[in-house]
Length: 117
Image (cartoon, rainbow, N blue to C red; front, side, top):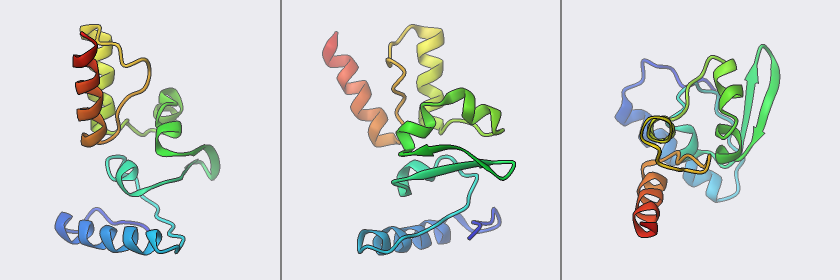
């Protein structure tokens, strides 16, 4: 299935929630998308395909930690990971290469960094 960019965001999120619930009940779901912000929220396993070849596979954290591979496939990091990358490079905030992929992960990581100060 290809999630078309013409879908209304609300409808898409309702549909993805349904697929997520079906997956939690044991059904395998395969989604093809370029929306890197949805992938970490709704996926437990990713197979990144470029030019017909699988170039990375694993959990969202495993795949998106391969920043150069992501960019070589003409994709970008999820917004939260991109923000962490910028904070690390420009503001010397050490994420130890473990960029958060979702808002929840970003919140937890920031609170952890605050606690370490």
